[in-house]
Length: 502
Image (cartoon, rainbow, N blue to C red; front, top):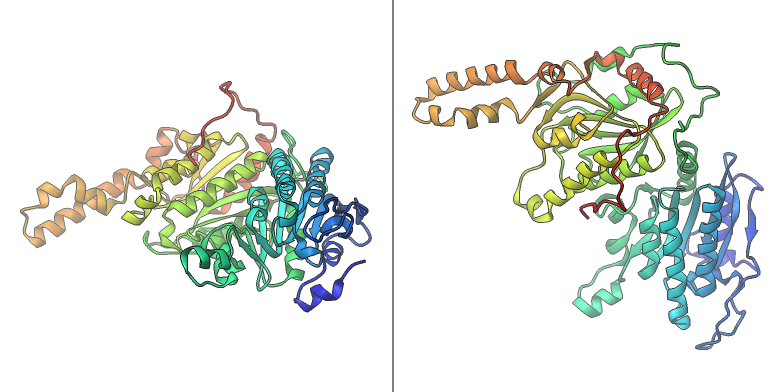
């Protein structure tokens, strides 16, 4: 019944092998194995394609129930006909009703042309249930072959997309169509390969070297995230949740990460690793918009989401792509009530005409909107720089963060001291000789540093709740999560929905 050898010749696993490798042993139960195509058209007869080219069912991953579907490229190129589409839609519907994640393994040439509008009807059903599931259950897409035309939009709606080297291809219009329309020659891999979507377009969230490693990472993700939306629920892998004053420990390594020079780079991963449980950090979109780091971790077993500026890239400044990356991750965490921990070290929004032309105003507004709208636990730790509008955008008290902390190294101001001195005293310095100007400028920089470039002013106004020692950060965050574990929003405006700046 299954043409395994045809897939193996292409260097890929068969649809059924993929399911069995991903799920717990002997846990898969197929649904709809006797469903087949109903159309007679273009030399296709009714009932010609077994299971209509997609295997659907349910199983477990690490004991967690999941619904799964896997397209079979050996059956008319995995193309989607009406029955194929309805099988996938019913799988997603089952996952919604069962309150569990749904995983789609995509390996399809797109719509089955022979079925005409019926194929499009199949896609429409899938998109509808993808949207219904969004924010209620996790949706994971694995691109394990071709994913072209209408087939890309279902993964595009889902929460996480996995791509695999030398296997994954995603594009709305393929190389042949591009050649016919624009006369441009491009290979399928250069147009929509794994590296393109992991590093350039930002469509993919996880970039894996092979199928086996991909399935291992999916299992890791399933173990980390909540299986469905549940109000007031902390997702933990610990046998019991500890009280915050039990087993208190401090990490002295955190005291030595921030360089003495404020313009010197460091790796924010070192801060993250010093806060979360050992080896628990699971980074999302690692290769895209690397000036911000997002991912999941655990603190004493409790799952959290982390957004952190990365000084190693673009000095941690926010741009269009990093704003989008962070905003979408914030919204995912908020959907499932995962506490959001923000680590701020941001010199501002990245300047330049390219960013303005790309719409930094619109993209930056998404970040402001996402943090403001999120009602889950929000805790912000200002590590070093927090300048201007970017200070506000990175989960400030003004966007209703529950707690904002600052390390002693924090600099909270409209801008850096150098720039401030030039703007405030530019006219006075205009006619000074070079030596006098340099001395005067340095004096004003020092004065600005003393008056503004420290967390005390913000703390005095209540914009920072406490100035804390770096080594106490993990324990402080854990205590806050405990006190906020039953958090409920005090203010809500009754409306249909807001208009996010897309």
